[in-house]
Each structure stands twice: as structure tokens, then as C-alpha cells.
Image 1 (tube, chains in turn blue, purple):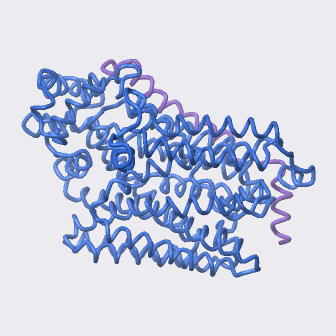
Image 2 (cartoon, rainbow over the protein chains, first blue to last red):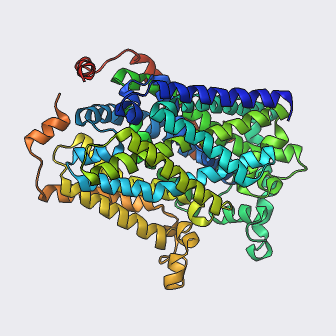
Image 3 (cartoon, chains in turn orange, blue):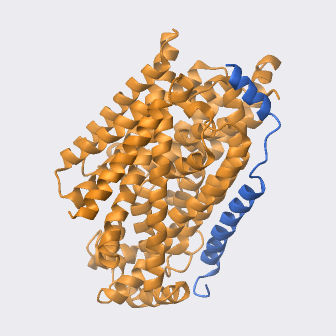
Length: 545
Length: 47
């Protein structure tokens, strides 16, 4: 490493340490530690929300998928901006902020528990978080650690230890204030890196129109010939195998949507676009951010910052991922991206190494580590507060020190995730798919009760509980026994019934969320009609003006 | 953009339009307060 790299590393660690210290210095109460004092600056709130949402998986994983399947992934970017930012901030943000304040809620499970006046709901929500979020965090932790190993050429265990110690320090010390301040720094680094990446890529291909024209040609030259090749002649998992598979799924080019209702269409629209695009609305670590601002004014300002940030993340990386095919074809002996990099998750790192100047490779590494750290710190904080505030405090029924309990919870959450990351550094299926699993489960379990609780006074406790249970049961069933990816990789259907999926045909490409969320919402509506309504007193507490 | 088919082209422009929507909404409501906020803030100060 040269002087430039050393200076950047020291400056980065110094800044992260300073922001963690600022969080610590300004954390005096439980409200400070759990909801950042409810007075966060809109710039910090928006970048923290965005940086928490966008992990290394979104950049490297989905960027690689864009190289494989093309620009149809831009539908996810549209959902990320319109649903994940505009709908979330404009329609859900302020009611969540106000109700959270009125009820004195400091965590998402506590918010649901107090809205529905149910300890069971608070415990259940905390249990869901503690059961599934560690797997999601482990996937991010493994991904981030691998980039450190790759660049610095150090042992995986040492990289994991250093990486987790740094995050532990500022999450424990600074609470949500420390987390959000560092998120804002990390989000800024990600924004700069992504902007440079898009500019370099488009410029090297002669402008956006020229780049898209080249992309059509590359498909014709490298993928169309595969149509006449039998799948049995190709090595499973190889670049040509994957490209041939995409044609069988209904893809006809990187600039085109897959055929309507084909397997590819169902995968792009239900799993990628709806699964992630709607799933984001029910993420506990994101919802809690609405409770960190003082007024609607901050949320309004955050809409502007968040919209620009998200298009520069998923929008830019999807465009770059797809266009990398044209770049590799032009500058790497006529091969497309997958043929050059070998694997989907290798496309973006390989493209950065081959196409970008050396100094940018280093900056991009920081963007990836920042993406991992910002997601992880929020996950650890959410899991820690779920342990301390939502489980121990509720079960003990005593007035305990919430901040201390949350800090102990953070240590437990980090230790468990680091243990999993240490044991499974090659990411077994359940961990590799944990992001998708967590998004589907959260949406099916929490979304009807969260939105119903915010807007409908007639939404009952029985409706909330039954909707959550139905959401859990249906999504678990779909993930374990039907969906073509999770059911196959988890292997439960195979073990019990000798088949990868209990259903067949295109329906196995439909995401769990698309099946479980409507059923969960329907359950809530039906049960609300026939169950006991809340007293006026309770409703006044939740909704009073 | 003539090289993108209708579905992809639509997604591309919706991305741009939704970003513009966020920017315009944020800018137009930059200083807009909720009626409840002043009372909320006062309550917060008392706690």
C-alpha cells in the first residue's frame, strides 16, 4: 500500500471514530440512545436511511444480476425511489413519527406493541427480528469482510475481528446517534463512488445512447448463438450456462423486458422488484428512523436527499452492471460480462479492477465497506434494542436501565453474527438468501399491521395478531416448499418430499411476498370486522391531535 | 433511448420522474411544518 491508501484509511477510521465519539458525547438519555433524541438533521436522516437500505449485496449482488439479466432491473430502482422513499417518507413517515412520539415508542416492536396494546405483539416482533436478522447481518458481514480480505490480503478471521470491533465500538458507544452520523459519512462516500463509476463507464462507451446500442450488438454476438446449444452441453453454473438459462426464462436482450409472465418476468417483477421494492416498507431498522426527526419539515427535506441518493445507488449500479457487457466486449476480446468475470457476484469487482483507474479501485472498496458498515451498524442496533428494550424489559416487568440493556443486547447480537460469519465464511444457502427471506417475511408479517395501525382506528388487536401469524405461516411455507430459489437451497422440501418444490410451472418463480402479503392483509380486514374494537381512550392516545 | 424496449424505457423514465418528484416535493415543502409540531416540541421540552 502506498502513502495515498494509508492516509485515506487513517482519515476514514479517524472520521468514523470522531462521529462515534460525537454520538457518545450527545447521548444522555434512553431516547438519545434508541431514537437519536428525536431531533436528527434531515440530511443525516435521509443518508442514514438510504445507506442502511443499500448494502454490499445491493451494489455487488444486484449489480451482477443486472449484468446477467439487463436493464429490466430498473423497475426495482423505480420502486426503491417511488415506494421506498416517496411513499415511505411522505405518507408513512409523519404518522409514524407522531404516533411513535405520542405512545413513547422507541423501537419498532414497541411501536406495534403500544399501538395494539399488546405485549405479545411486541415480543413476537422482537422474536422475528432476533430470529431472522442475524442471518441477514451475517450475509452482510461476510460480504464486507471478503472485500477487506481481497484488497488487503489478510486472513479472513483477522479481517472479521477488526471489522466487527470497529462497528461494535461506535454502535455501543454512540447508540443510534453514532450509527446515523457514521451512516451519513458512509452514504456520502457511496454517493461519490457511484457517481464517478457511472460517469467513467458511460464516457468510456461513447455516451449513453452509444452504450445502449453496443449492448444490443453484444447480446447478438455472445448470447444469441447459445440458443442453438443444448443445456446439457454446458457446464452448470458457467457463464454460458447462465446466459442460456436467461434465454430459456424469456430474456431476449439486455435492453428488453423478458416475455410477459415468463419465468424471467416473474423473477424480475415479483422477486426482485416487488420483493425488495415493497419489502423495504416493513424493515424495522428503517421504520425506526422516522421516529428520529423532530417534525414533518425534516421528513420533507429528507425526501429530496433520499430520492437523489437512491437513484445514484441502485439506478447507477444497475446501468453500470448492464453496460459492463458492452465494456468487456469492446475491451476484453469480445466477451460479455459473465464470460469475463466467471460468476455473477464477480462481475462488479472484476469490472472495477479492469475498467477503472487504480485510485478508484481503492475508493470503491471504501464505498463497499461503507455500504456494509452502514447496514450492519443499524442491524446491530435494531437487534440490540430488540433484546434489551423489547424482550428483557417486557419480560422482567421492572423499570430497568434501557440504555445499558440495549448495549448488552448489541454485544450479544454482534457476537452471534460474528460467530455465524466465522463458522460460515463461504455463505451456505440460508445465509446467501437471507436478505430476500428477511424482506419477504417482514413485509408479510408486519406491513398490514404497520399500515393498518397507522391509518385505521378499526384495526383490532386480534386482526394484528392473526395477520402476523398468517403472514409468518404463508411466507414460511412458500419459502420452504415452493419458491424455486429458497425451497431448493434450503432443502426442506427435498428432505421431506423428495422434490425441490411442491408446485411446478411458472408459479414457483412468484415471490413469497406476492402470495403471503395479500393473504395477511385480507386476514387483518376480515378479523377486524368480527373482533373487539379498541376503547376511545386508547384510540385517542394513538391518534389524538 | 431508442435502443430500449417499451418496458425498460418506461422503467428508465419512471426512475427519472420519481427522482424529480422527490426533488420537487422536498424543495416545495422545505419549510412546511405540521400543525402539531409546535405543540409536540413544547411537550418534548417539558419532558
